[in-house]
Image (cartoon, rainbow, N blue to C red; front, top):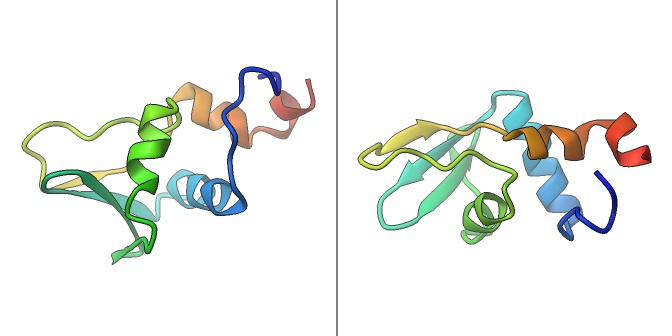
Length: 86
């Protein structure tokens, strides 16, 4: 993934992607998805929507109150040091 196609990510965004990759995150879904890390809501309530809109997280299904958070192929590529170097 080139820097021209990669979304602008903060250090917090990358840390959350790493936590998702480690299986530590779920979505709480009421009106908007909220990312839970180790069961605790992320203080940045907009991060889930931003990372979903950027194509980095798989959107939770409709009707799921608690859903596992997962990375898309693009999200995995952001964390892949080989992909970042190219």
